[in-house]
Length: 100
Image (cartoon, rainbow, N blue to C red):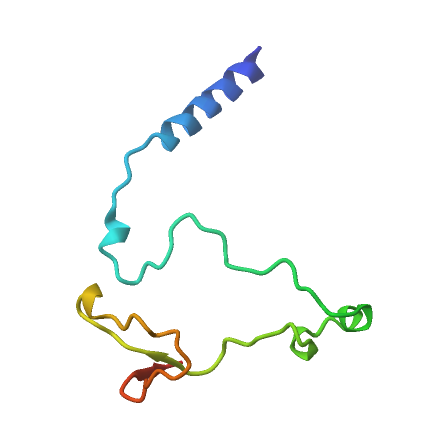
C-alpha cells in the first residue's frame, strides 16, 4: 500500500510539472536554436546495390548529395522583395552573397 502511495505522489508531481507555465525566455535568447527537440539525424539511406550498402560509405553512392560548401543567399527586408524566379537555371545571382 505504501508503494502505491509513493508512486501516486510521484505521478502527481510529474503531472503538475507538465502543466507548469513556460517562461518563454528562450524566445528572447538569440543563442537558443531549439527547445525539446531530438538531435537531427538520418535513419535511412538508399544504396543502389548491396555491395555498396555493405561498405556503408554513403559518399560513394550515386544517391548521395553533399550539402556542404558555399550557398548563395539574397536577404531582403520584406517578403515582397524576394526573387520569385530563384529556381530558374538562368537566374543571374552574381549580386547575391555566399555563406558556408
